[in-house]
Image (cartoon, rainbow, N blue to C red; front, side, top):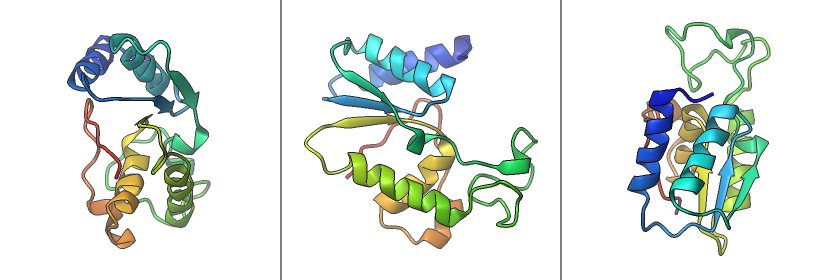
Length: 148
């Protein structure tokens, strides 16, 4: 669940998006992302808009590293042989499917997710070299981008 700080960040994000024309909000199935999406919908008075929960937007699977302190690794730099973790290829494939589903449609879509998958989405969206995914800065709380 979002704590007081998280609720405030979600409200601030919503206010920074005032005037952005949205048709659809898509969220990760994780609770904090869903709560953030619901706050944005409420703050922007978008109760008539559809909220879709899409597992393609879930955070990168870290396998045995899940829940461990992330010293020396990130979702973009985990060793490829980490037991139970998604490979970069798997995450890029998932990110491609997500972009194909929601990008270049007749709907303006807000994706509410996590910084790990964001790096992969941004790499693809901006046509960057896939080998440079770890160089993409983490997604800051309360930040949003427009897909193009």
